[in-house]
Image (cartoon, rainbow, N blue to C red; front, side, top):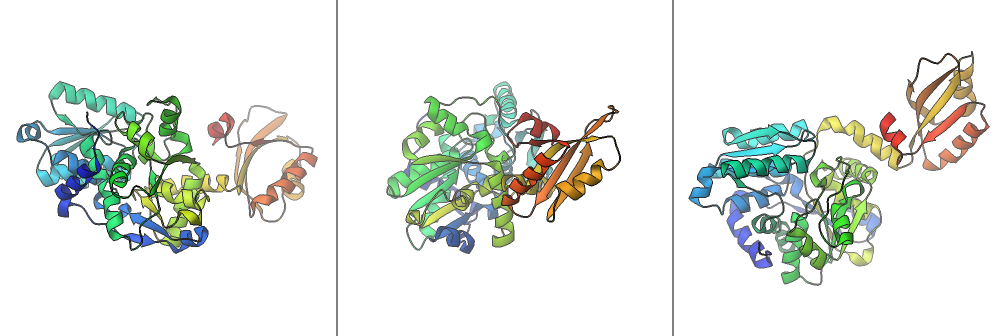
Length: 415
């Protein structure tokens, strides 16, 4: 399979034409203030299907022959690629099946059906994208349906690369740095091939969630490898193995690949909403998280961050707030062993806790021991530095108190 080029991106833009939106390129005052330089947001959260994925899907499907169209198409997706395929199927009157992992948010499932209508059938299977992908490829082999790869095909990569082509057409000042999220690598690869031919002096930074850094693992190994475990929270980029086609493009043309903690992504999602009025999904906040964490400087500006998607389920916001608070050092969890005697809880409340230290969770974890009663206690503080004095008071207390660290198995098991 040949590598796509910047010329392919230009051709894909011609195929897409008026089928996709020319999304805004907007200055972020908040992020520009943090950087002390211009930070521009490419608003693909406002795209058809609220994600850039429609570009790659339509670019791919629009090239099919009449014979291929008659056989139908199939894809696997965490949600956004499926919406792109659904849109293309409806516009081109082609029947398609989409295989989605069970972790796909309900909101995305509803959107897929709304967009595709009678032209799309959903099949929910597997706990990850890779399991759903394997099932979809098996279906394609059995039926002859055309498999529409979400990232590892020249037509998909070229379509996704049209995002950066638009950026340079819209920017009043030539961008010096472009920050792009990486899952399987299609968007980053499409960005890289166009920039290499048209703006070779522009720096490209790829960003992955720390819990699913499959491109970093591939770069370290010298080839795509499977990650045995991934954190699926940033579902739009939670891919266990990057593409065979996207890997060498990113290896050779992307200047740097960085990772950001999922908690920091949650903090940035909240900031995007509260300060910029942008509803971003976790993957959509990856690029701007790099700026928020200070991983670029004013010398890198103008900086363009691609807000890759805005399909976020409201039911996830409790988890988003939780992860953000833990990452920011504002929420901490402890196992507190209370002796079964009067006054133990009162001592904890009066002598261990202080002003502006609030209990946000109190739950007994064991009830069959007559001597002691371990409890899971969540405490929220107003500033991160307060944790030192809280720990000192806990140490001085006669109670047995164990702090649960976020990166330990006990933390994930109990929470």
